[in-house]
Image 1 (cartoon, helix red, strand yellow):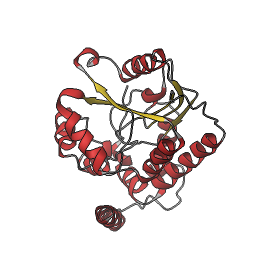
Image 2: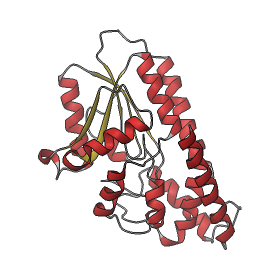
Image 3: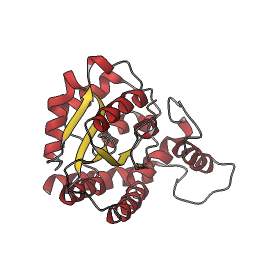
Image 4: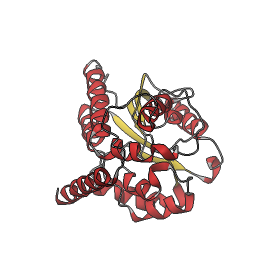
Length: 252
């Protein structure tokens, strides 16, 4: 609890700093010819998957993404999605044979990497695999609280929760397990990570293969939650898919 309070205070500090230094406040309504209006349209386009394979956040949108992630709108968006997931959960009657599965992605679904991407100008800098691996090794990613609550609800309801991530098995398993445990993600069925066998596969292909294997084992995938379209696309995606917002990066 104390750790969560410190992280919340840090987020508030970063938000205040952002507001104080911004020359064009992103929270004020503006006309259609200004950067903020463009960035709002850009974020809508990427979240609806109309803009694909984008590599970096447009530089003029850095402040917009920062304020979106830190000033409360991101949290409200995630909370709304989780509310709708819970509505769906209330409609499900589990057979009770222990084969009812739910899939959650890890990065920016269970654990937030906003502190890392702050150093990368919220995605305006190109993806740095070495830098991200160094960050992930520290195990300091905080839980995304509405998803943690969803996770606990799924466990209590009787689902077998599978955490499926593109993180590297060989180098990041121990750090990821500890990070998840420290943030309250305990009791999941499996943490599935990339191995040498699927290292060069796209995220869509890799996660499709994992889901296929799960269904071959007899699991019913009731739901699938991720922050990337590649978490949810492909075959065997589950009965319902739910995408969380992420304007900081795109994973093909």
